[in-house]
Length: 387
Image (cartoon, rainbow, N blue to C red):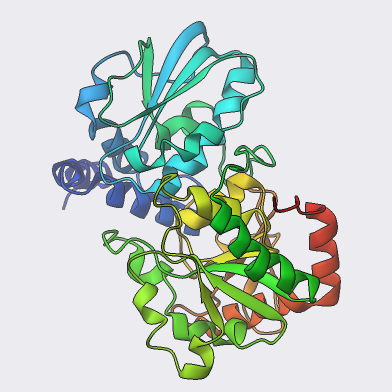
């Protein structure tokens, strides 16, 4: 029989062989395992866990080989290149952008070059930076700026010594995109501002993530018909920000429910760039309700009130509710947990795997409870006027 360490070494070899095909999937599965344990290992041998985490570092040899890897050491005056990895989702790119200003303020590095997926470059022009030190955003495929050190963005928190479940990011590390087409402004006035003036709670809703994420997607996406407690609530107006895959579920709803979902104009995000108009819209509504998608990270980065719906077991960035001392159970059976990283986000987690109804009921109650609405509006402050 192999020893514990020998088993770990064998498993690590297998994982590294698989890494070339699905590095991000393995990374996220490791995070999910760690989330259940509430630590960084899930009881696995440390060598195996480190291997699962490190496969991502080897997924971009084109950048990883251009400079020494940054391990958290003091590098004042030097430029750190923070890059994406193969197969990485947009949400990861948004989330780890929240660490850039704190890193610069610490003085550990003098400047940052931050790589984003090409469709996101336009929105990333709104990345906040008041540190006095430069953050240069460039798109994947472009020539990277000169740099002295390099690290994958999903390893940045490790190098900084940050526990994602406990760390509090900037309240809003993205500025609201304010340049928006006149016809979109008119649409927001009609579909958001006027219903708010009539007493409606207006939300953006997303329920489906990337179908290409074979590791986690089936569990973390919620079928739209499971969200009827939200959709059919007379106090709530629902605007779908579900783009592409998953949006076909609207047409499959019963007619009464289908008529209660407002779709954004087809021209949204077409000219300005991915998520650009959607981010502006998010800043105007009362809340964003979403599953674990890029939508959650954009809303969180904007500082918008966000209600995140999660499966019972998710990734390390989201606390495992049954083992988290901050979690409370709602009258409907879901777990309710405040999130630290995104200070204006609340997590609603399944208590039974695959059972979304208690989550939807809990979210609907949160959105329409008089006390919760008053507290949320006081926290967010007045909405900027629509031009």
